[in-house]
Length: 263
Image (cartoon, rainbow, N blue to C red):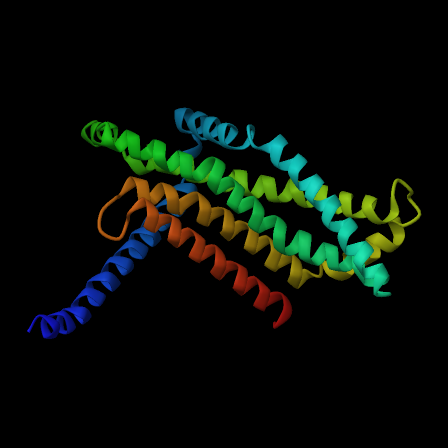
């Protein structure tokens, strides 16, 4: 009888699990829509709200910018050297630089920047928001007639997205410079060929995919950890939020690869 009861209870558990997963994603989508509406609202950028946004953006971006830029330069130079030496050994030198730019700039840098922002910015901000909720700060805001989403969630989401986009953009410039130095050194002789290769790689379609990938990856790592901390409950645990974030980043990466190489 116990075995039969377990078999009968299995579909029910799966159904409850699916409901919790769907509820968690629905809350994420709802909060994302609310944040988007607030981002388009002029009142978000007035007075004290603008000062709060600027404070969070600087606090999220400035401490991690030098370290990540230096790390991106070191990794880019190392990867460029490895790829160039390997390509030379196989007689494929003319493809080495294009391969570095495609793999490093188009694929690795945006994903690495998003993960770095998640670890150094978004997840700590989610924990901070959870502490504020546990201390009753969000309830006090509601009793005072203020919106916790506008006051606490929006600045952190915008700051995380801004940090991700800034790190990705700056690191791509650094990676392109390191790739050139790794192949041509300090000479300007290779600049015409390099710019021609750059134009062949960054076609309008590739550029659009790169911009959308960077934007959506930055929004994903900025929104999901903080939203999970703001509204905990069934399907919205912190561990579940991290799992959703990594799953969404993987989906964005797969879609970008399909857009770049199968479109």
